[in-house]
Length: 139
Image (cartoon, rainbow, N blue to C red; front, side):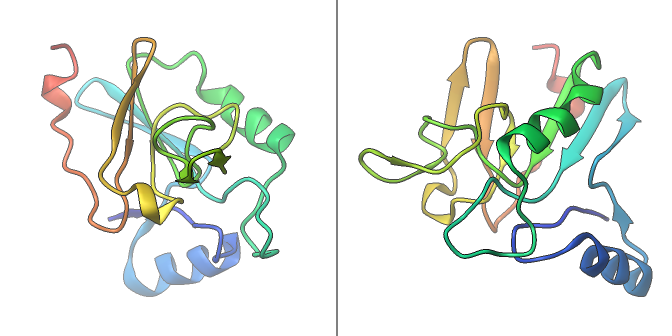
């Protein structure tokens, strides 16, 4: 089981959880599975709630850079891509991150939504999760 922190958890919270239950903390890391790279970044862009798991837009961009050359790449982040159907609470109110394009879950109201951003598919997996068959990535 792989885990990443949301905006309500700190890196140390996830480290303790991983140690206690034998999970693997994938925050800021990548692995290779079935010929695909899977990378993950937890936390969110700044919120009005001052939660422990927040990065600035610049920090998110910097932390995503190491994944930019990985192909094929499945990127899993807590924070959704900005100005898409995955980050809106209501019309005109978007709370995603500029550097983000991938699977996400931060905006609960957008759970289950899917979008295409150029050739990149984005999905808000929400609390239910998402089963991805890596062998179908080439299709």
